[in-house]
Image (cartoon, rainbow, N blue to C red; front, side, top):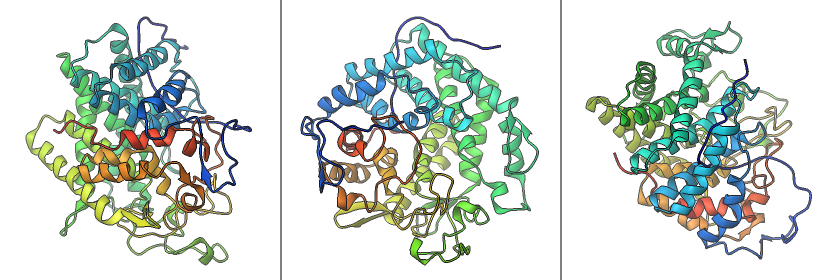
Length: 437
């Protein structure tokens, strides 16, 4: 039976998606510097009013936009609260109210795409509580929608696992992975995005409901699995730093050419895998906030302290190993141990090419590494924001996305570099955005 949540009152959210053939007011893409002369690139209020509000007024929970919206909204949502900007909070609130009223949970959107957006919504709920915002009925309806969806994914829905028979629920699949000692392929043990988002959203909801003096044993269980994932599957390094599931992706096609230093070196499609392999730095951008969500909802002081140690050490790993600088531009090495081989060569959305050294650097534009929450990381984003309007000939070496996926006109590239979206995210990332635990 199709469920439709037609409700009452007020809420909000954000971005990404499609093709735009014409760009009135913009310079040609081939020009050296990309500029929209109608924008003040250093005025975050103007950029919010002209760009983000427009984005938030769109139904970003549709198939085309939902994945990107989860990425692009996260920094603005947190910034609105840390800056105590009531107008921005109301923009976000209206967006989520529309989501609750119009969203059909029985849609055919893929689980991973849904979870990107659901995580932005769950973070919004935690921020309402954290900032003592009076809750309206539609906030509770949003929490209930997310909770019911999460429990369904956790316990009931089929959970795929490569070429194996589906598990019954993500909990069953996760338990299998966490106890697997002799995997057939290395990636049989890999904790994937679906599971990381589930434990993060579940932890946010646990925190939210407990603030209302409501305990939910399933949300408590999900949070406990999150603790286990980050404590058991990560590795604190002797010299400082933290790595997640080392070598778990060695057999996977996405990493099959990681031993090459450039795409030009690849001949005849011959595999060459790095001896020691770590998660790519693009997927790694989600880990700091996900760890924070699990940590914030953890009641045990012992586990909370262990998670805090992980959180602090991943900041060190980012600053010392992943981050680099070239031609005065901040860039990322492709893998979280600081190595820089080829990633996703001949991927389904990158046929005939792939991500060579530093080519994952574009993930910096969504600002999630700023959730490492230190001044020195925030200063990186502040410096980046001062480089707008940008020299496209320099930036295109490191930042432009290679995907051919259809996107929202506000979020497609290279438009997002000069229409104000990425610049606003960088400006908002120029200070830590999380209240310390």
